[in-house]
Length: 392
Image (cartoon, rainbow, N blue to C red; front, side, top):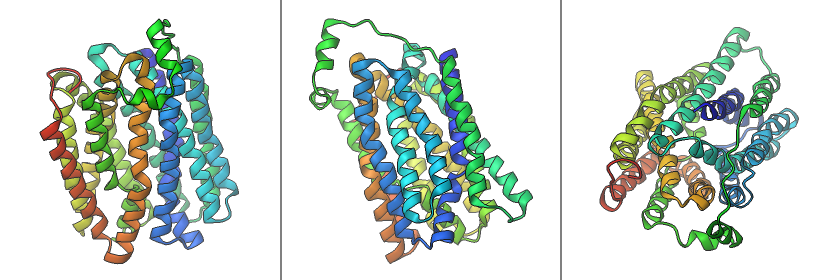
């Protein structure tokens, strides 16, 4: 578990850096460059989708060359370049370019990092391992949000966005230094594995488990309604929350996710992944209906708490599910494919949300997302086989 802890610390410092700036980006786009809600959706969708398209190929490279640590490091290094890009951006196009660099880095690092986590965990503790990683990840994000909140509050509105962007580079550097302590497990090359690796990754994808194929379809449907968190920020802003209060809402979300990720990950080891994935999608649906109709501040607070609970139930558990059902020699490819499928839906999801918001009001994109989440839950209930331990 020591390796998982250091991998978690890398994510802790990286997400601390990222979340020091992420809640400010949509407000910066709208305030400094006059970006519309549709443009915000397009920027977020392009950045997330381009990154996710890399994940399956990054996973394939992980399986073929077994350079997990090097690939992960290069992906995390892109996060530092992202902050530098924000410093020099003078238009919304510059922000888009910086966001693309950041998300491309995420596309490169996610699969090899997840393989490192899964290989460091025992077969009976996969959910716990991913839960620990997610808890540290969310704790770092929450810490970043807390830092930026304290800075903005103490500066009493007299701050420069670019100074905050520069400050966020410090934890990004610390995260890269933590790679010194990560150990990479080398897998013994077997004849069958070598033959698999020689094939293009799209040929291997055809042979994946039918249950995994089903889950990937469900993930795509769900993600079409899971638009960028930027819309949650804009919704809260439109409801009267100022920059400081919006940041506090995101701090609450990350705190809830960090607290529940480990116990829920361990629970999935005992009761099966399906028994957490289904209620997770249902909670997301309730959460999005909340965003659609919430008016009072207390309602928004409750909705962000639900969003944190959903994140703790789904994110680590779904990675554990994919990692344990995938063939050992294709683990990176399958983890990457999962992220790529979700990413392929992110651009249309964010564009759809922006268009629905602009033409029909702020409630409609959240209602749309809630309905797709319910559909995803129903598909899992009807078609996904449940298993008593791992691999639900």
